Amino acid sequence: MHRKSHSANTSMYVCLMVLILIFIAVDDVAARRGRARGRTKSRMQIGLPITGKYRDPESDQYYNNNNGAKITLASHFDYEYVLGHKIAFLCVARGTPRPQITWFKDGVEIFSHLYLHVHEWNIGKDKVKSKIEIDPATQMDAGVYECTADNMYSIDRRSFKTDFSIAFD
Image (cartoon, rainbow, N blue to C red; front, side):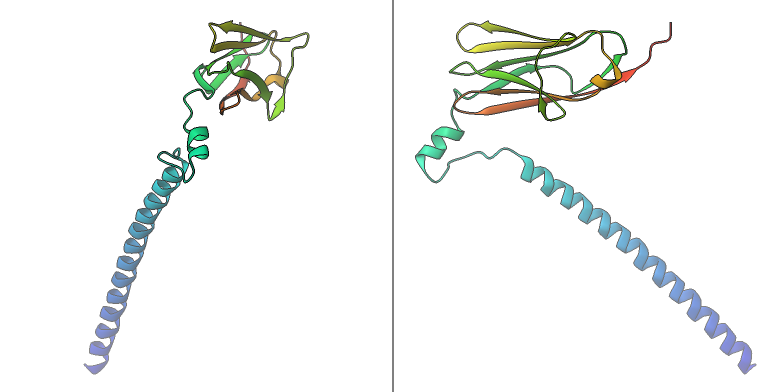
């Protein structure tokens, strides 16, 4: 009799320990999920633009200048092109003085060549439109493109990620 009772107590003790461990594991997962949400939220908050007053008026005037370069229109971020066809990206910016637009591919400034052309139009006294065309597009044209608009007050950037697909006729 004594042996069965001891065995039953041991079984009950093991079951109780398993339940406690399950409870701790579930609680730990929930806590980690909660922390992950908080961490993501704070990361987003850090990425928000700084608004408000700066300590000295010169900084405030520089960072909150309405004449700074601003990109007002740009192509889609993710673009899939067909090999052998044309790729085109558009970037429109405004600012006083009129911003200059510079194009980059994978962090390196790009210039016109036989298969790549950069077109630029001045619109009014404070706006510029720039378009890059690659025709025909090859596998080497996949990557991250960026247009940068800048004037003496600020710089604005937009990125475009491209990858190719093969068209089967």
